[in-house]
Amino acid sequence: MPLTVLGGGSNLLVSDRGIRGLVVANQARWHGRARELPGSVAGEDAARQRRHRGIRRAVGRLRVGAFRNGLGGLEWAVSVPGTVAGAVIGNAGAHGSDTAASLAWVLVRGPGGARRVLFRDDLRYSYRSSVLKEQLLEAVHGAGPIVLAAGFLLKQEDSGPLAERADGYLARRRATQPVEPSAGSIFRNPAGDYAGRLIESLGLSGRASAAHRCPCDTPISSSMQGKQAPLMRRR
Image 1 (cartoon, rainbow, N blue to C red):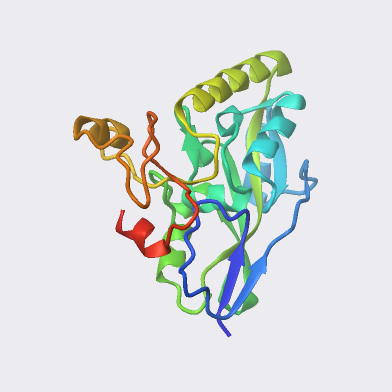
Image 2: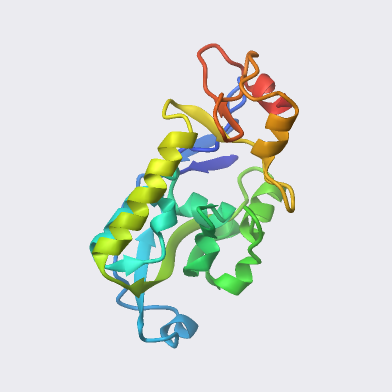
């Protein structure tokens, strides 16, 4: 039977016909300091702090827990939707940083149930992509990889400046992106440019349609009652 595993459901477009097979909504929420680390990670700079995260931990909450404990490196994740697993697979990022900048390792379940640890270099990270994302796109009948856990290497810093930096990022996000439910940022920035600038230059910002773009600075498609999945896919 085809298997689909969901995390937080962000950046997800479901067909109006539904999903064939079994859908599992992962509710794992454990997080904390790692007591044991995969071999090559344990040999990293001792001045850096280790954090091990359950896969459904919300990215924003992960960031809050980190800076409250004086651990820096995830401030960019303030208010970023989704889960740790989604961030690991898609190399989520904002404000000049991304997941790849602090990820150390990830525990993955592959086809047949086999588990393996992958390190950052194994993931072949690029802009909003990774080898895991490529495998998911190529997977048939739910045979793609499932992220079970992830470890981050974070720097010890004073919590005050960390919170101040995060608050600044949050204020910027609230000023430039919608607060209502949306389909998220649906365009990738081309090399050397920004999708939002290109849309603005074509006079398409805020253009009304059945699936319209948010009238703000970012290429976000707002979620409206009555929309159908094909309309979103065509955009």
